[in-house]
Image (cartoon, rainbow, N blue to C red; front, side, top):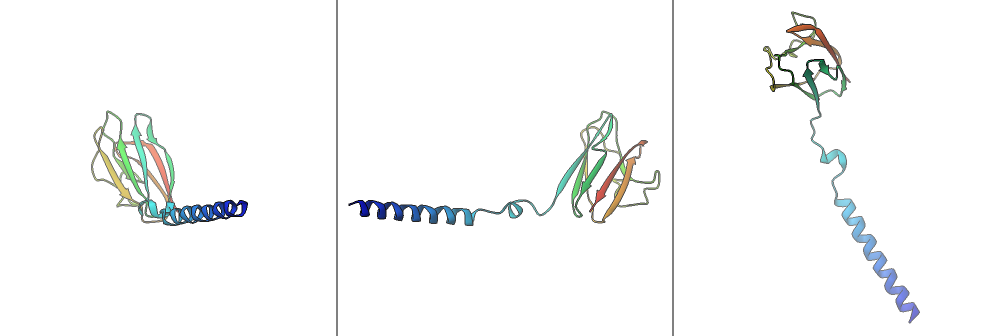
Length: 127
């Protein structure tokens, strides 16, 4: 009788282990569960860019959101020509509540500023 109980418990444990293994095997891995596009955000406030320094991977899309009551215009350095990374420029000011997104596809350290208030600066490092 004891042998049958032990054998039954062993069979139950093997079945349970197989079910757990099958469930874990079919779960999506974290890297496949995430979008293939990386995203980051920069808030534009009365204090400036938050964060003022950002490190991202190549191909990351950064969204700039104006949370200030004044218009803001994020653009590549230097002011006023924006020639370091010319594509990094929405070509217009963003009013309060507006956002603009840019995908960084060139590695490097990209300095930028608020075109309407050039003393407000930031840096995005693309690895």
